[in-house]
Length: 173
Image (cartoon, rainbow, N blue to C red; front, side, top):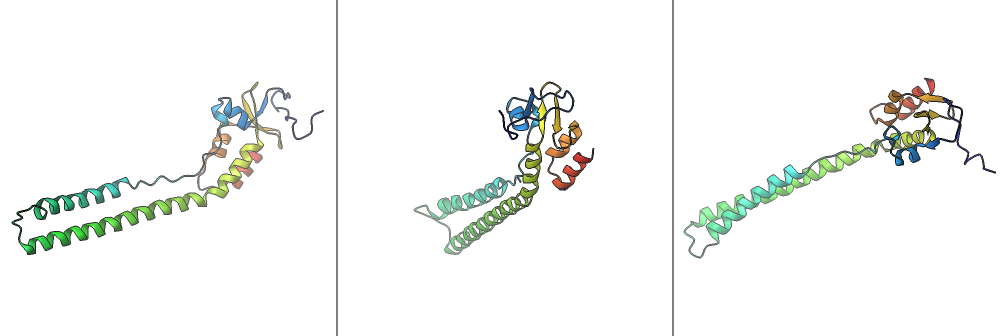
């Protein structure tokens, strides 16, 4: 005898439960409309900043090696000092630019972290609905209503709206 927790709810469209799957099982079986909400992420690129800094420092190092590092350097001492000062300034600027790029990444991660509670609630809602393979519908067993594709898109989206408002809108329809 199956317990109440393992029994699948009946589909409101066909009133049968033999083809009913959890959203996880349906998604793993290849049903794209049963995809879980996307985890909030923020993609911030550091490459342009780091690449620019590396090129500037590389040019300074090249000039130092070529103009000062030669055995018979004819560059005056004042010019050598200016070149070394410019190279030092470029290295410090590269470090500052790298730090600013890293701060942008940290801020992007913090913005994504703020959305985690909403994503957790969306995942809870996603885990509570079922898919019927016979009728190709997603339904909420608590309300006994079939969810439309628009409602599924709302469930999956992670916009500014809170997931609680989305869940209430889904339950009301």
